[in-house]
Image 1 (cartoon, one colour):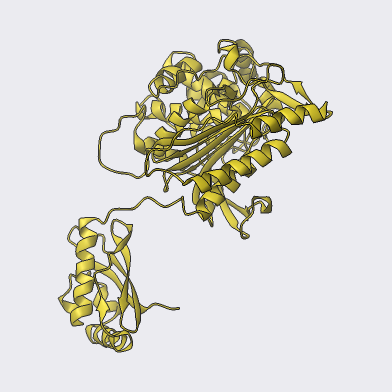
Image 2: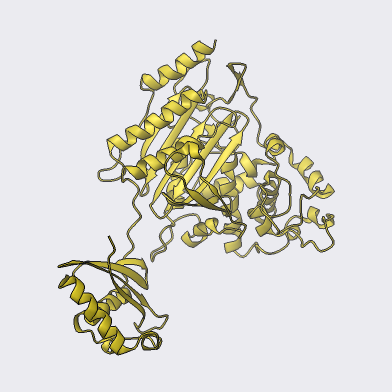
Length: 501
């Protein structure tokens, strides 16, 4: 039985059940880089006993690569396609968080108000200590309400009827700690956010998400009621048990849908990823999405409970210590290779999922699998590292602001003449180093490196600071210029130094 089951998964991989989108000209990684991504996911699918898998890569607002592996169900053996429907479990929380922020934008919710303002059943709760603050909406968003981590229990509450959830809320729940002192993941907390959305909007949570996000973004195949979706498109969820696949029971839509109920396809979910990534960078121009770009960028705002740990060595690459904080339905990682990674996983009976966003690079990668808690986090991170190694993940260029360009012109004039006092200086500059010492510094550097080509562009760090590197006769000059926070362009920092080998 095991050999037969593994054979059809391997056959599905080897025989090209793949469906791949054609990348627009000039957008996305080359064929060799994508082939390495495919290899990583293929090997993982076999090793992890995953019956069905789909993954997609979004670059600069386009789904440039999407691929199905394996089968939708082990009976019909219908191949997985970009339109196959998977439940994405806790990746659903991102819709909930953005719904709360949208209602906040409309003045209907205050994030730092007590949650009981919007859910009256919470008013009679007994808190763990006499000095405990009341749970706020922000506490629920950032998993800092003091509830116990509840993944084993919470995943099975998807089917809870609304009336039963009302009774649970009214009775109250025990606390693991006082609210606001730490981050601890809570499905119950996000189910409570779903109730807030319903109470404040006046429509059931699922309908609010459908009207305000899924329909505007064209996610026509995405929803919460798995029994209403086309049976022919559904990827059936399985548990790997006793060397075989055991079908997990389908869970109907219930009161806990806000924490994990979404069912979607790769083609639909790519539209969600495209929308989220479009919020970066901050810029002028009309907002055309369901919520403003600035609101989307709030999702990465951490709760100040940052931690640090070594990156899982199984991912590969050099040892890397990561800083991690939880934002609003997203985990935010500072990775030594990839930079800022905004990510979340989903684990459910019959399903596992992962999404990774690199907002500064305009790249997103997601994967859905039809195996209980079979999230493809490991191959997703490996794939991102492979794309980075191939040079396919470049930071979006930051434009040089007019003020920074003016400051750079001033820096070049100082180098040419050595007369720092003729530059537009902030009042700290000659206090930190007087004019004669500036002149001596520049003359000494020129003696070392000779004549320099100063046509190299400045690389902006932000709108008011940049770095530059000039090639000279006998070396290179590395420099930095920084504007002062004054309306007129003035220099508060200027650096010239010989570039070290």
